[in-house]
Length: 160
Image 1 (cartoon, one colour):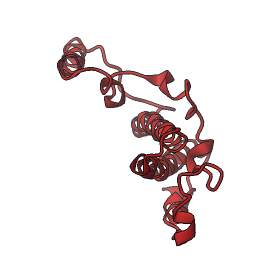
Image 2 (cartoon, rainbow, N blue to C red):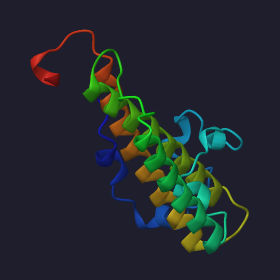
Image 3 (cartoon, helix red, strand yellow):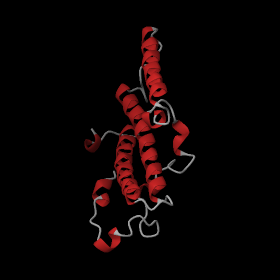
């Protein structure tokens, strides 16, 4: 199980603070999150806020409304399937959360990469990029914990 918050919150020496935006001096912690590279992280786009942000306010609100209405219609028609994964409802819900969290980790890692590796000299942009990087690692830690839990072969005292 990973605990990325400990390594993310290291104190940085004043000399290194000046160079934080430089890719050569520091490696992104989230660099190894699968699907975080350009053209990969968006493969799972559905009606998420990370997708709706590309729409103006009225169309985005319409899509939110339509999604809620469509789900209500599905429920009225008894179309939804009870979430299940390996014969367990709880595992089904955790698996769904895992997939959404994995997407968020990839999105944050992509955001970090774009912000830190950009050709701009905006210090604030780079700082936001490093913040997104640390968040990506925290979310990836949750993904790893859920994955370990729902794919465990046996129940032990540790994961009960």
